[in-house]
Image (tube, rainbow, N blue to C red; front, side, top):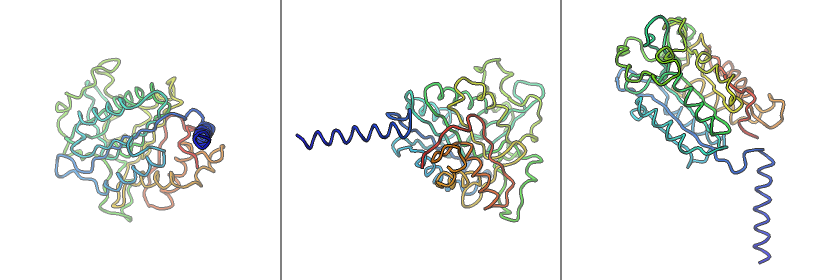
Length: 319
């Protein structure tokens, strides 16, 4: 009896210590959704090294405290437009109030002329069949998750157009690595994407694009256009979006994994990155972003800048 009482006390003390070590995180679960497309329906569309991205994303989820049982993965043919939508819905169904969420995507980005007519360009993630999952739809999915979760973190390792930004690629390191852009010559007609038209978004058809004043092929990673509103959202304190490149750059793959993903994974495993934050021992989004950019400069020849939107002071992990 005495041994059982001591055991119960030990368990209670452990839970108390866990609550003290990470305020607000006791009793909460961590969830991950890992998405990657290295092979598209069109056999000409491939991205090298995406199997390594998937492995690195799993290590990132583990570093963020996600148990294997709470990790969902979808890849390649599973990520049609409807498949991507269903994967996000499955994640949302799992999340309980106070939980933490990690979403990762690696694949092509895509642009199409604004479907609602007039000037402008619609951007998003290229789906398996060559469709497009609009960035504004993705933003709304993250916002819906943030209504329930205490923390929503997304790493997006893709870019949205080639254009002039493809000139930032320095082929000295890897001549065969093309930017992660759905090849313009292989795009389907805009009408083929009409079934994915976001009619339900506020404002009707005009909201299919966050780049009303931009032409396709110019902006590569216009993350701030779609996701900049997170900074004004009452839930912004719990949302962090990390893009693999800046607005005038492309994101690149390598046979060892995509540049941004390799940088993120390396920095999440390095306790030294926490020293960049004011609170010792805590790795924030801003500290991770700074570490990743330094890693890219130190270990590669690519001109690629990690871009952060949302709460840069959001804590990601303790060391």
